[in-house]
Image (cartoon, rainbow, N blue to C red; front, side, top):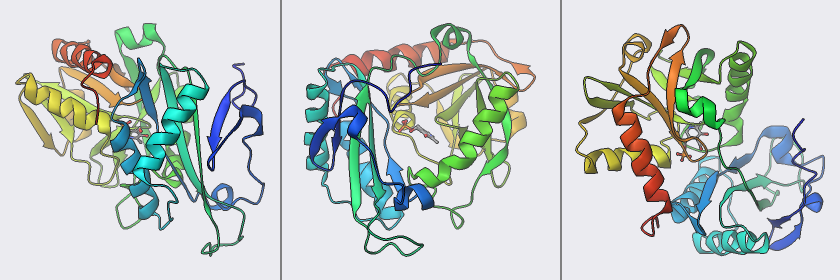
Length: 294
Ligand SMILES: Cc1ncc(COP(=O)(O)O)c(C=O)c1O
């Protein structure tokens, strides 16, 4: 089994201090643990520069606001903290995981007296999906769980509470031999994968679902900008699962997943196509270029 995440060397930024990795702990009566009152980010640093760093910090603060949780840090504070922890760990190419949660100052549903705590961990994480799987395209199994309607959950927030169904869906997919799960929304339209957005190409037109009840990923937004620059016809629309399965190409986007081709959804197979390859290599160039500032 891979080394456990609590048992590693390194340093973690926690509530304004840099602490040894194994000492970055919380009390068992932490509100965030019992009631999922937590939000988080996933970011990547390439050659010493965090891609879209400010946008990630803004999203963390916005995610907290959306679950009524006060953030004690500004964007500038978060930017400084991220730079500090990367440098303390001597990392230039890394994944960063900022997380904010309600503490153990009050226990129960009411949480007005809790403090919002913040930690930032970072570590080397070269590829979310194994490189050989990425090359022929990952496989997705349609999940039984659906993205909820906006009146049911804070769907625009990167809130921990939303990931319960994602984990269950990913477990079911992996047990059936798939790489990840495809989640539909509460209406039956295509939504996203468990930690990434989805795009399809049909007759040269790039399409992606309108993010009205799931995360409008920063990588998704970047890829749409790149498609405009590359003059690839693009449409943001509602997509039914049958339309998705008739696509010429399908790929996922996400900070962790970057641009990853999809080779199979349930029983339908796809080949890795030209639009996917062009967007993938343009994205890979952009994140390592000096213009990758948000
Ligand atoms: C559920 C979900 N959708 C989409 C994304 C992609 O978002 P981003 O491109 O901002 O990483 C993520 C990753 O953060 C995610 O967890």
